[in-house]
Length: 433
Image 1 (cartoon, rainbow, N blue to C red):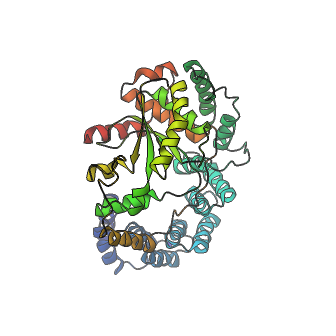
Image 2 (image 1 turned 180 degrees about the horizontal axis):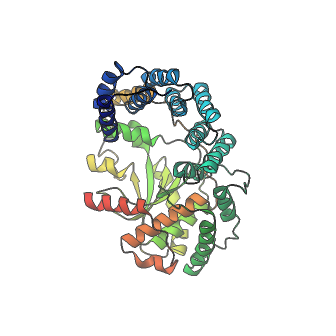
Image 3 (image 1 turned 90 degrees about the vertical axis):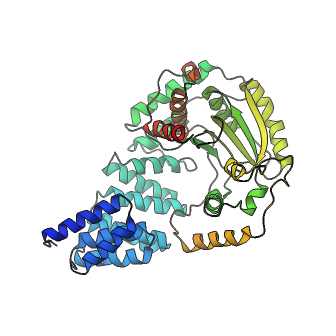
């Protein structure tokens, strides 16, 4: 549909777009609603209004407006795709899939719709379907960074059949097939790490033209959902510590060099804990939080944490040797900053759960229940062994090391793929410290 718009209204549409880009969604909505009273047959304007409603989490309103865009132009592919997103937020799975597929039916090479459909299947745990659609998104747009990263994330816990037509799956497969000589039963030399990284880097350069990856934490999950997003949401909104977090005990490992962190990664990947405890290794990017290279093992009691230390310490002593620290703490460091003494496991009564916090938790749970249903992922156990995601995160660690002037990285590699993401993340942290 070709609809003429007068110059004055074109100017108003430009204003709406600028407000939207600046994330002034309330102002953008007021102006677009006003304009729609006079311009009732402009599908682009309905679609823009729908996107503003999406940003304001007005899911039902966005569905109605996207439908008006489609009523004006039944081939408006972006409106079908956006309608799918709105239905995903509403938890209406069949409707979301129907609209993504309609967008693809109209435009066979529409990568955004393939990626959105893939993430929908990904959230539902239908990984074969998710992989198929991520691959299609990349087939029609090899520069679709979101689809690339989504597919790499998925392969942390799902191993698709080798697809020689997709370079990302092929790279993951080839990395997993390297005859790795590194074992935590022996000492790990810097030469072994160097040899291994050389082989991995050859695979990366052969298969990936964009090495951007927006993660700095490598997890080994056991399938249990700690629900940390919910707990942090309660803390950030109401400055309370959720009740669950009073029973969250962690073994924390602090390290001095990126080489030590890489060795800890192999320990976490290969070690077996009696309760298959969740563990992660990462670089510290949070403003105001001390430390650089860290590991965490999640436990349910101080006694369990001490047993983890007893298991872990001999491997640490053999592989990392010195300049590391093992300690037990409760919960997250941010909580202790707000409530000093909370993390001290020698006196767990320093900070106690307050009864009036329960009402705040209820409000958060109601907000989550009534909020978006999109992204409620099925949790699965992480696959063991080095994968593509791990390797890209390790490169982010090496970028971090270079930026903070930790020269140890030179002992294991002379090739680092620059990460703008890490550069900006370290800059933000330094600016806020």
